[in-house]
Length: 179
Image 1 (cartoon, helix red, strand yellow):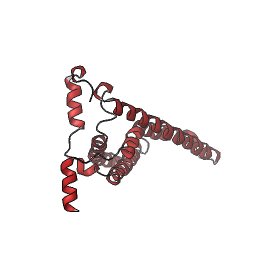
Image 2 (cartoon, helix red, strand yellow; image 1 turned 90 degrees about the vertical axis):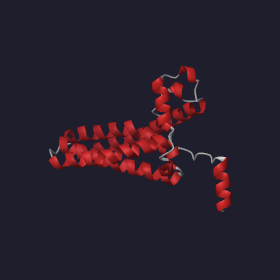
Image 3 (cartoon, rainbow, N blue to C red; image 1 turned 30 degrees about the vertical axis):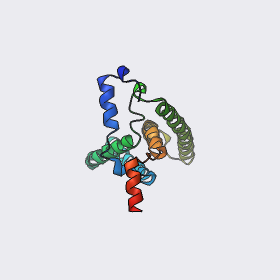
Image 4 (cartoon, one colour; image 1 turned 120 degrees about the vertical axis):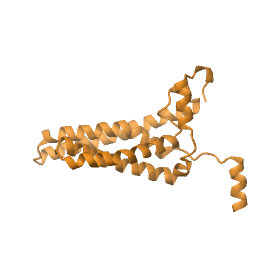
């Protein structure tokens, strides 16, 4: 971790929060982390669809659906943040050199993924416009969806690329005795 004397009380609290181990069984393996990221993406898509249903479609039931999705979405976000040890949430001074490098790699990969997503959005809306769909009606929805994806893409990439934590010596002994 970074030098302790530079950290504020907020930094120390956040570092301790992001490094708690209670949720570790949920993200211990790469497969579990991928499952949580996929669940988070699905919850995000459902919540965005519900929100757009309240704003564009004026559906009152969508508001209740959105509220029902909020808690599982927050839990999944917390699990991903725990799996990455707060890589994207902590201030740079609370990260060591390796973590700062990993943060930059995650941001670069997220930028690359967003470039392709933006290209797909442009091509998709262009094709919709050429096929006779009212293009003006799509602008808000597509822009909002791309905004949400841009906001969350680094978190998803970090969750997908997080490495397994090395086993402690006590875990090695327990694994050797069990096997």
